[in-house]
Length: 336
Image (cartoon, rainbow, N blue to C red; front, side, top):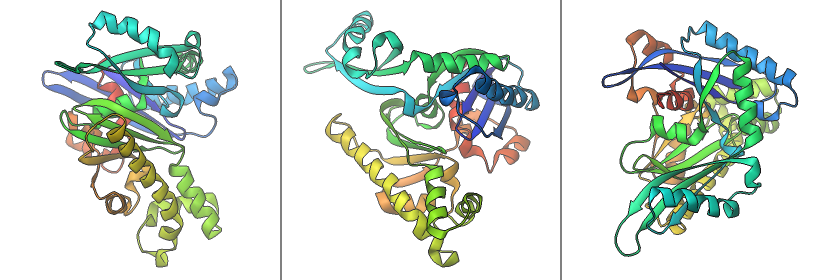
């Protein structure tokens, strides 16, 4: 069994998978909303303990068997970039990363946990090695591990949200863009042949949509949240909800264009052939069609369970919530 826990800023999602001969099978899944501070902003053990209790209860209520779990760190709080080296051996890459990391990471190396992954080797003239460098503040990792420990669980894997998304949503070949709408941030990643080549996080996400609607229509936050989910970018209510949300949605579209432009010009990469969307906002009415119109590219809602065997009953229960589980499923697919 392998378990993934995605601790969002509003909702915690958990998934347990079992390894089979031909892949993975879903054993259990569940989600719970919570109020309070997110782990990275917890000021003391008391605040962490309150969140640990939420995780412990979810783990029990969903009937998760294993107590060993993999977790994801918020993309907005980690540092990710690709580095190109000459043709080096794996061991030489390890040494090179240690020398090069300092200039790419905005915090002292002594305060960071640095990992790398070789994502491409090219031979011949001008060949070399492309490496994905990921660095996390040590205090952040320790805080998350402490949070999980407080729930009576053991952390066996830690990675970024985008790496988990890539595992659950990205195809094995081709270049695609992954777009994950969270509550407080939206993650953008360009993936080539199943490997993350570029990623960034922007603070425009679900809460920004709701705030814009609340302010524009002069309604309470909770009512704005309900309007967003019900009407979204459709023409209903005389298009008033759409008119309020459109400027914020356009901001997201512009950030996607910037990401693609950077990848094509700086990384000399191919343009994505499609965009795969996940997260709660992806189910907002007309969100997908609006993105398609704004970007002129195929946009689809990702199904993180596409690589997992799911029984009929579970499939029915998850039908309206699959978009929430992309990170949790990706973590469980690690097979820790």
